[in-house]
Length: 59
Image (tube, rainbow, N blue to C red):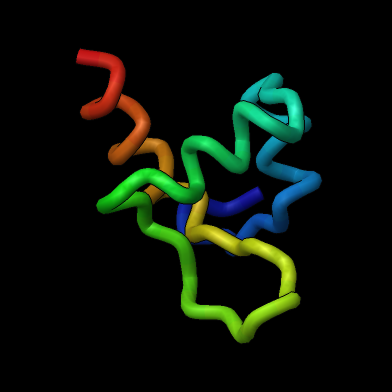
């Protein structure tokens, strides 16, 4: 998996060990680098951007 890979909601949960509710809570937090999506479409993020954002949230 490359640095700038786009990951899906399920991959996000697997990589970071999040439960579905915890992942949704993070993805709905203001400033989270979620890629634009239409209503009803799955969440996707750029892994490297999410990593940096998550580190900043945990400080």
